[in-house]
Image 1 (cartoon, rainbow, N blue to C red):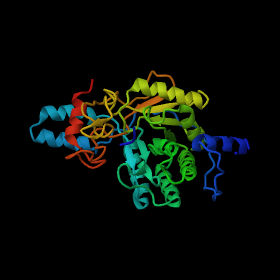
Image 2 (tube, rainbow, N blue to C red; image 1 turned 180 degrees about the horizontal axis):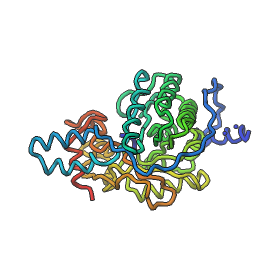
Image 3 (tube, rainbow, N blue to C red; image 1 turned 120 degrees about the vertical axis):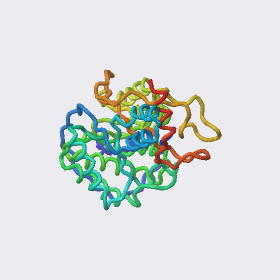
Amino acid sequence: MLRSSRRPALVAGIALTLLLTGCGDEAPERPPTETVSADRSSPPLPPTFYVDPRGAASWQVTEWAQEGRAEDAATLRRISTRPTARWLVGDSATVTEEVSEFLAGASRSGQTPVLVTHNLPQRDCGRQGQGGAESAGAYQDWIRRVAAGVQGRPVTIVVEPGAVPDAVDRCVDDVDERLDLLRDAVTVLGSTGSARVYLDAGHPGWITDGARLAAALRRAGVAEADGFALNVANFVGTPQNVTYGHEISDALGGTTTFVIDTSRNGRGRYPGETVRSAPSWCNPPGRALGADPTTDTGLERVDALLWVKYPGESDGACRPGEPESGAWWPEYALGLARRAG
């Protein structure tokens, strides 16, 4: 779970650095991060997102039906029949094959898949243990392997949930390297020519200064992306995300569009900071599935509503008996589905 271009360039770069750091100390020199030139047109918005028939909810439905839990199986179909994202979290040896296989399945279905890259060094700032690529070079290699799996097929990609807000929070060792790596990732993935790329921007309860967040998004390459993503793996209601998204978009010039993760925001955020002495962003009770994924949002500047977080996967072992982060939790999934509107 994720928490609650130089003179015009030199002058702009100094101003943005001061905005992020809050001080006037001169940053040390560093070797430039390798990038790929961005020169592309955005692919069209997809008519239909991909429903993966091998998702956890699908086999759970089958298992419960065989056990006689027909009502629960029927309820859980509210998840198994909806398009959800595939998260890519590492392993350079297999990621090209994983991406290619996933996109091939979507292509056979005539649908467009959603991918999430989540493998930056120091991802999550240690909130859910350690993870991510071992170095900047390893991450750049991994991103290129992800791009190699696309092979000109349509795909929507959400880039590194939480990475920009974490940079604004300065919980990473090297903010400049983090933002350089994100810009490189956006450019490499966009250069496939068939991917719509959205750079994650957190949620309304995280970075409250929209102008400061927008400055970081610029440095991270949002101008080369198709927009930004909000509410990934969180519970904030759609109206609040739309308002927040417009604030960020306005700070970026007023034309940047965005997507919203509605997988679990049907009842909004939990009304409190903690639940049984653990943070309420982690597996809060009483939540519900949100609006179905669609590009027909009827909302200004909102390209799509997506299910980015897989509903029913744990946010972490925050309380006794709760599964580790990313583990399938059927009873929590069932509760989300039961309470859906």
